Image (cartoon, rainbow, N blue to C red; front, side, top):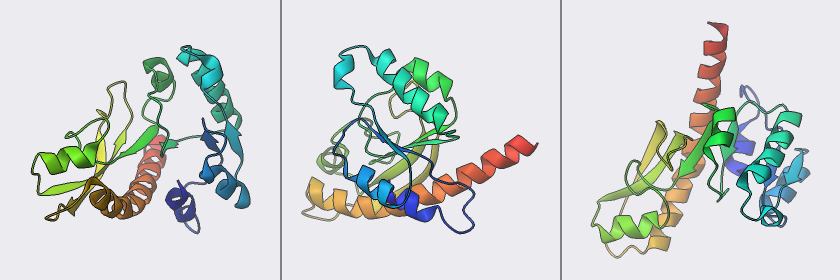
Length: 181
């Protein structure tokens, strides 16, 4: 999240307007506030199994902040098809694998166990299919002999901080050009 925020300066075509979390103590909230970015917390726990009610509150915050593009980063909740439909084509996510390989969790250990030569990360559009939306960019990272999942994760994280801001910039420019056409 901070790599995205920090990249959005100078001639960047986007501007961070809201950092929202479902965890009140998330470290990114304080960092965003320190940079003058509005923040919101919508704890999912009081909603129980009513994911739609939880997402309705999120949607209200996003609309009030006049968000154009949602970038998920560390938001570990699966969004419902109804929420995704409201924001169709405007939600990006970073995933720690070279999609379509290793959707879901434990991606690094799965790549190592499979004997893959590379791990990596992918930025994709969010669709109703988990980690199944169009891939907008990827970065490969060599899997080295003796790598643990943590070793690989640390190297992939460096690439995530480069890839996600680059893809976001490209995505916003393309979106603006499509709106002019």
